[in-house]
Amino acid sequence: MCRNIHTLHNFEPAATDDEVHAAALQFVRKISGSTKPSKVNAEAFDRAVEEIAHISRHLLEDLISTAPPKNREIEAEKAKVRSAKRFAAA
Image: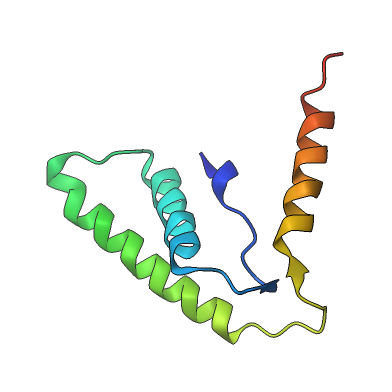
């Protein structure tokens, strides 16, 4: 489930609200043990996602890095290479 949570800090351009929301959703899914909550739990689930996304956005805005910002395309290519090595036929 949490494989979809990626590092969002120190990228140019900065993480979008959709990326932050997706990471918060994956986090809530993981800790709740549910990918889709029941109707009775939907409000609490959705509220948790929104609150975690909000706090995550503040965290990303407040973090300081001395490293140069990462390039999204280069990082995506590195991930593809790692994946190809990991899942290559033996």
